[in-house]
Every structure is written in structure tokens, then in C-alpha cells.
Image (cartoon, rainbow, N blue to C red):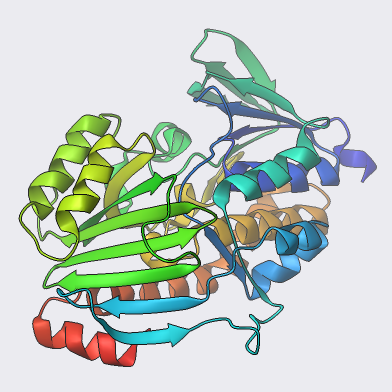
Amino acid sequence: MESLKEKKVLISGASIAGLSTAYWMNRLGYKVTIVEIANEPRMGGTAVDIRGKTIDVVKRMGIFERLKSNALNLEMIEFKNADDETEKSIIIKTKEVEVPNDEIEIERTKLVSILLDDLKNDVEFIFNDSITALNERKDDIHVTFKNGSQHVFDLVIGCDGTHSGVRKIWFGDETKYTHFLEAYFSISIVNKSLVKKDTMQFYNVPGKAYMLNAYKNKTDIVFCFLSEKEIPYNYRDVEQQKKIILEQFVGQGWRTAELLEEVNHSTNFYFDKFCQIKMPSWTKGRVALVGDAAYCASPAAGMGGALAMEGAAVLADALQKHNGNFELAFQDYNKNLRPFIEEVQAEAELNVREKFIPRTEEAIRKRNEEGF
């Protein structure tokens, strides 16, 4: 697309959303720059599920076979009681039962590495920096960086997560768009198997949930709890966040003491509220948002990475269709993706209340009997 060869786009965030968007924008012919506040791309986090339409996206990106060859092999989901007895088990995969070809679970770090491999020679990366101001003019958008430098781009795309800096600067404060689902969660990734490999375990008491997911000699430890009111905390203060989890779960049964000890010493820890981002438009002027920055569905959807990749492809398809006319493309992006996002968000809200964190013993028993 010759007309796009001289166009420059700035992407904020070297996340799955940012790297996927960079892939498509580069393929369309844009000169792509990625700015990332951290000193390296965003690694870590729980595994990513890729299924449905997102499978078509990764095939178009030429990475399907690499993802498939690095896929995790979840074999069993178990629902535990306080005596560590299995009340219900769901067999996901055996030698006789294969996971369908249209479903891949992969470590987030591996997915990011695969995306990076395809981009590293084609895209400019700026680490340890961020956008502090945006000034749109008739033919471009003027960007000021934290380091004091200023540059001009044709488009800016915010792929910088639920707490997006681009969204705050350009669309307004986070509180305008955050929809709290009355629950919190933490994820700790430890380098040991705390349950049988390729097994996921769930344990609940009313209003609280535990999940263990063991794969490749690692275990994700997930704690969730309901809270009608929001808890004030600094989302950059990990020790404060660990304290919230320790106070919420101390004295509980099952394997709580052992798991809290792991969390306390974990160097790979993440904490946040279950929330969704709901915006009337994901674009304004020459700025668009992709992924959690635009339409976070919360981890209860289990689709954060997939929605980011799909959103990046929908945006790129719209720009290609309109030959780089961003105003028409942004209209299509908002219209074409929204029904799917609203469906996923509605399902995630239901998951929090009924599947992940049931409020009563009766609801826990029902969920354990029925599974997911």
C-alpha cells in the first residue's frame, strides 16, 4: 500500500496488544515506533487462551504453527473440598481425547517472544519512556515523551493496558470508564509444581476462590475475593498488594498457609480488581485504543490476549479497507468489533459471580457438580 509508506504510527505499550498492532501496522506499510514504560516488553502473567476467531488471526499472522508447537497441555480440571478431596474432575485431554485444532493455550512469555521475533528488525522500540502529552493538529499529532523529546506522528495507538496512560491523557480519567465487578484477584507464578503437572485445581469458600494451574514445572497461584466496595491501593506498590491478599485469606482452610507463604516470597506477583473498561468510542481524532486499554473484559473472560490480537487485526483491516483514511477506518473499528466485545464482557460478569467466586456453600456445591 504505497500511500502508507511515509505514514508514521506510535504505539504505546509493548504488550500482546501493542506487538500485535505493530505487526499489522508494519504489514500495512506504516513506519512503526513502540514506546514502553518498562525496560523490556511485557512478559509474565497467566497463560493465554487462543480460540475461535483469534485462531484465524494468528494463521493470517503466520504464527499458528509456532504457537501450536509451544502449546500447553492441560489434561485435567479438579474441584477440591477443604479435605483436599476431588469432588468433580473434568478430563480435558488424554491420548484418546485431543484438544481441538482450533484451541491453543500458551504461556504469555512465549507468545510475546514469538511476536517479538517477527518484529524486532522492522519496528523501532523505545524503552523506559512514556507519552506525557498529545497535541493533535490538522495533518498530524504532536507527541511529548517523558524524557522531554518531542516527535510527530500520523496516528497514536494506546495499547497500554487497563490503567492506560494514553486513555487518561486523551479520553479522560480512568474512573469515567471503569466498571468494577466487586472482586479482586492476585496471580503469583512460582517455579515449581504444586499440583500434578498439566492440572488445574479450584477450591472455594463463600466469597473467596483459589486456583492452581501447573504446567512446565511452574504453577500459577490465583487468589480471588469478593468486595462490594473498592479498596484503595497503589497499583505500583507490590508489598501493599501482597498484604491485602494475606489479610483476606489468613486462617482459611485447605492449603492456604502454604500458598500464602509462596505468595509472600514470590517475585512474580500481580494484583488488581476485576473490572471492565467500557467506552462509548475507542477512538478520538488520530488516537485509537486497542486491547485492555479500550475494552478490558477482566481475567474472568479468560480472553484478554485473544481480544487484543483480534482488536489489532480488526483495526488493521479497517485501515486497509479505507486505504489509510483513519476517520473512516476508526468508525468501522468501533462498529465491527463492539458486538463481540459486549458479548464477552457480559459473559465475564456472569463468570465472576457464578463460576469463579460463588457467594454461598450451596452455589459452590452446584458449581463443583456442574463444572464450567
